[in-house]
Length: 361
Image (cartoon, rainbow, N blue to C red):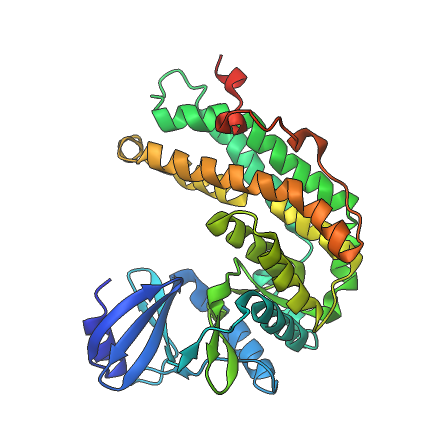
């Protein structure tokens, strides 16, 4: 994206150079360092909700959002090319010695700070609380709809279509298992029991939504991704993001959970809900949804092999985590959660085991 004109006209800043890191663009300007984040333009309707949460968190001593920079016209963000652009003042950043542990602590402080939020019922359009099973089933039905579309006689099947169709049984079963696992874990009960532990979460939390200053500690970013939901969402998404990036690294996962528990310990029932979230193949189903909306011409231009490799790699990495997590949780925290027997596979089976080849016959 070309930031020079936007920064000059909207913020009065002259850009020297920039680099991307995770969800942010780091901007070196004539007035110092700034961070620029983006979100879909439709999120602008969340403004009152975000302001309420920011104001509520402003009284917290341990963890605060970064300082938001207003435009020269006093606006809190800019809309450009169907994206909201918002800018923070930069920090003298540092990386903690045990980043995973301190990330867990900071996330716990964030949740703890939102547990006493009042008036949250006024913002139900931005709530996912208690709706996971319904949302997940909706995404699974969209995958079913895609499969039905492919049954049409005149539909041209691409190589990527073949991949999605041969993956259908495995991925759909994984999603259905995730929904059933939530019910088995008393999901609705956990929603009620953990309300005071935190009312706000991120849509897809990752570690780079928390930055550390050399002198002032941890700061939050990415508030346009906030929704009303329980803390298990952020914990599960952090684990999924880590597994996607580096595979199952038990000590790092343990450090993160230990850091979180040092502030506000998780209930035993939450470990099972987190596992249900890990089971759910959200990334895969999101790709199916986006691909289904493309025109036939656009589908021909898709890098099907690249997408397939990424999705296969994620499924394989997550399968390793799904096998390891219940054993790990029991050994480290003394919590027993059910394992999914059909996930177990012989060690020498080929990596394309995640695909159901029979469905293409």
